[in-house]
Length: 182
Ligand SMILES: *[C@@H]1O[C@H](CO)[C@@H](O)[C@H](O)[C@H]1NC(C)=O
Ligand SMILES: *[C@@H]1O[C@H](CO)[C@@H](O)[C@H](O)[C@H]1NC(C)=O
Image (tube, rainbow, N blue to C red; front, side, top):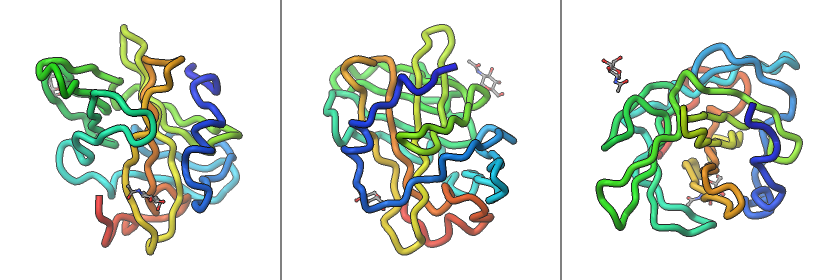
């Protein structure tokens, strides 16, 4: 499917070294936002993060600036403009009626990457745009957020995001989003 070629070591360098990556073991999909680590370390389930529709709205790209803002909802489809029942939607800040869909919840794929760790990817059909969410396991006392890394110039159809949350840690359980600011 959409594999390693979408992710570059540049992204890792760009993201801060202070945070522990999710393990590079495989995670077997059990639902649109959950998977089970094949090394026995437990289940990753993002559903406690879902608040609102979408949970993360109109986030600007932090590292590769552009004129778009990005919205992401784990687990549950949302609609915005011409994005219908999507997981990820991009909106052009300059042309207000311009939206791009980056895949449905059903298209979710969990991919282990030796550079990045665990990535949750969505693919839009038929455009083949890819929404890639790096899952970063952080402790509860750390800042938690969705960071939009941006679109790499060589892959303009791929938006790379990074989700920093205790819910990205295997075995975190249903209280992983408690006292979390999104
Ligand atoms: C979105 O999902 C709703 C509920 O499942 C459905 O009624 C609607 O037709 C869907 N819209 C599109 C454009 O797929
Ligand atoms: C997002 O969270 C990460 C990990 O805790 C942190 O290093 C980074 O500074 C946060 N970014 C923002 C914009 O809050």
